[in-house]
Image (cartoon, rainbow, N blue to C red; front, side):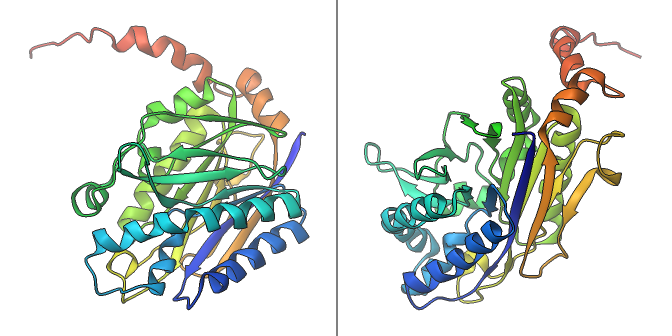
Length: 295
C-alpha cells in the first residue's frame, strides 16, 4: 500500500446522557471517514472523559477518572465492531485502564485493525496533573504496530516531547507516528504541535496529530480545551509546503483528511536533501563523552 488516506479528528467534548449517545458521536465520525475512503482514523487523548458526565461530577476528580476503566469493555466492543464493519484502522484515543495485577491506572491508547483485533500503547510519560492529581502511572514499553500500510507507532501527547521515543520507532521502520493529545491551552497545544513537527522532520516520518476541542465546565479535567488536528510531513521538496499536508481551524469540531505517499517517505530516507534519520547513527559517538572547556 503506497497511498494511505488518513482522517484525524478535532473531537468536540460535550456532555452525554448515556454511553449510547457517546457511541453515536463516535460512529458518525468513523462512518464519515469510511465514506471518504480513509484507511486510518485517529481520535484524541482523553476524549472518553465526556463519559464522566454520566456520573457525579462533584466528586474529587481522581475518583471520577477511575470510573472510566469500568467503560473499557464497552469501549473495546464499540471500536472493534466499527473497525471491522468499516474496514479501517482506528487509533481510538485514550481511556483510563486499570491494571488487574497491580491495581494501578494507566492512560492507554487502543489501536484497532480492520479484523477487529487490537493492540495497546500506554502513555509513558505523565504530565504533572496526571502524576500529582490523578495518580496515573506510566507504561514502560514502546510498541510498534505492523499493519497493511507498514509500521506505525503511537506517542500519546506528552510522549512526543521526548525525541528518543520517536527516534527508536523510526529506526524500527515506522513511517507513521500517531499523536493523540488533550491540551487545555495554547501553550500546551503548541508544545505538542511543535514537537510533533520536529519528530516528522528529524525522523522523516508522517505525524498524525489529533486533539480535543470544546469544554465540559462541570468537569475539572476538561473545563478548557485547545486543539487543532493536523497531518504533518518532513520538510523537503517531496512534501507539502511548510511540512503541513492538512490541518483544521483551531477549536472547531471537524475532521481533517489527507492522503500520504508511503513510498515517498522511504525514498527520502535515501535520497532526501538531508538524511537526519541515517545521519543520527553517528550522534551517539559524538555525545558519549562531551568535552568540557573552561573559558
